[in-house]
Length: 111
Length: 116
Image (cartoon, rainbow over all chains, first blue to last red; front, side, top):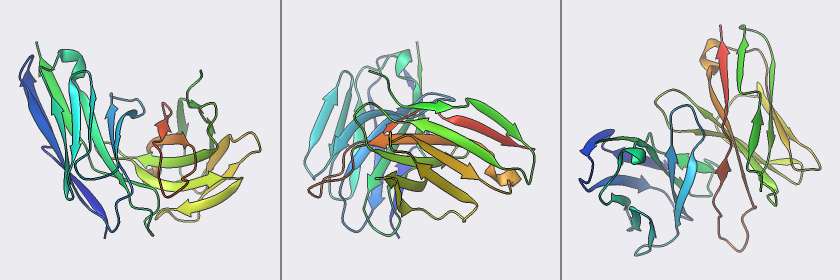
């Protein structure tokens, strides 16, 4: 069965302390991996799409990378406004339908 | 450029009642997907519409149904509400997959449904 596992569940950082979030996936035929940011009580905000192993995308303090089994979201010198839940999703296009999401990593950045 | 909009923002219903949620996609998008997000969980796929037909469906009972209109907007209907249907309901819009490539989905703010 296709599935997505994110770790850690929660991460507390000091402002400026760089770290990485992990997204491991098991799918039959990956057709796309997506990262989203979600603030409490709001809809997910699109960040990145990755299609093939070795691909990397960057946006401000965030960088997403992809291998054949997992993706990392690297956060460099985070600020308090980066605090949010980060969701990873894969599209396998199989019988399970559309995007399959992990449970997310809740990131807190303290000043 | 207006993003994805959803209405209402919040809704409180009683068990056994029926509810209709509405969604307008981002300008230029023709595909609408609906997701259910329970507290502390990732969104779960309900179904997807384009060309006014249900194209894919997740593991949800027939109590969940939908519709897409010619202007690409969409409705999600839930009949015989259960306490377990309390969740944030998210609508996402995109262009349909083409050439084997799947494009990103853009989410609306969601509708918070509480069933008492």
